[in-house]
Image 1 (spheres, rainbow over the protein chains, first blue to last red):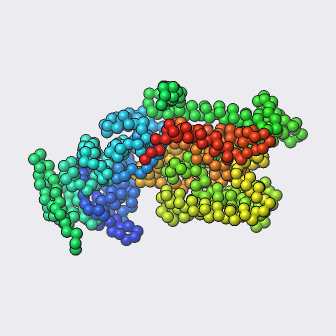
Image 2 (image 1 turned 135 degrees about the vertical axis):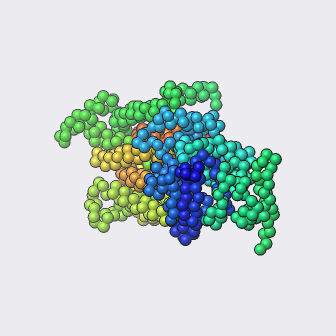
Image 3 (image 1 turned 90 degrees about the horizontal axis):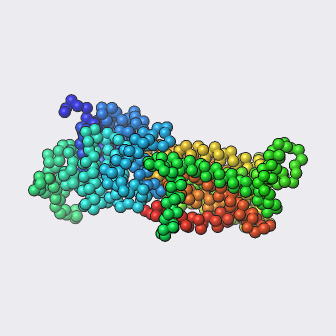
Length: 266
Length: 370
């Protein structure tokens, strides 16, 4: 496995915003293809900034980001869009588009000079809608769906973009327990040999249950990369979040994290 | 919903969609129907504009023969019919078509880019800026400090275009300084509009006996349209509309929000600025001679969304097709409802438009929930 080219390789990533805020400091790691990877860390630890650097929404200050061994920096936005797709944490209000049309927008980077999408595009979208259990909603307006359904539609849109890497930012932040699990099941089912999914998420137990690998960050720096059971320890939680927690294994062999009470007086 | 209504809607859908198996086949069929219906309705309304007027109603054959014989004459003496059809009614029909089309396309473009269904072509302050300078010309004989002749037919038009674009540029500058978000555009447009609106109010107070001329312009009207003026509006409107139409796919994309559109490979800031600029230039040309005609630019795009769906590859051609037709119909009504008195066409567009729109909102309004 070591001599394989990693799907995503981040080399000495530094990102300093114009206002001087140093969001990511010398972050380096690589992840192989075909994994569900959890990106964990407190608010403001540089997760979202790193994701935005990966799909070139932000320019990095220094370092390099490689996908399949090729730097994304010289690539055009359309080239990047064919490699990396992204699911936002929240859907901004849109009007007038149906679920089908929204998912079809995922084919935009491939349309080039065509006016209408092809039959192949349509078949792919139909299959994807089926796969995500939203086929029956395809003619509905997007903003009439429940938040769990909207999230699935946005993931479906990112999926038909046929990326090598899908970035998912806090997909479950507005969802209840069941929808959370459903979204993670869909993500897990989507991972295939040639696609890796990078999920930023606060629920560590959820990440440990579903992810093949965890990337853990704190204050813009990388803390650990590895299998959840190997890297998630009470010491790590204490270090990263400043919180005492018990980390255990449940009867099915899944890891869980149970934080303890904290003092709010300084 | 009653059974008749349901079956009516089903057959309307079949009519628009054809028998296509896939979404794209159905959309392509819709597109053909829009082009076909748009062309047929435009030709019919155009002919009606030539035939019907308060002075005289002529049959279509007479109207067309008078029009073509007048075109053939090239300057020599015309018969009364030829003067009526060629010199008066034809340019008026062209202007109504162009203004309706231009305002509708501009409205659709603004709504998509600003991602707000309540936006109309005047949101960027164009109407109030145009109105302010136009009033300066009408009431105070403003001649751009002597740069233009006080007798030029283009004086009010140039004033309106310059005023509209100045207000637009101020709005853009303010909105971009405020971060270029969609809310920044709307808020900037509103405050810049208020400033120019206040200037207008003050000028109207001091306009004395010219107040009726001012109000006539502000209400919007297609009287006094000549061939030169009609062509002056038509050419930029056609060019800009077709140019905007090319970007229909991108307009769908920006509906998802700036972040999503950017990560799909679109330079959103540049795209938004380009579309807003073009739509504002087009709006300025639309108000130049005919004044401010409300409602069309807000409603026609929504009418198209409700009839043809929200895909801008259908909304934009739909707006092109229906905008002109509805404006011609409104102008016809404005001239004919009260014999001998021409009503402001803007009032008519609103009076006809609201019931139709209310009905569509009633049956399709859920698409705007959220």
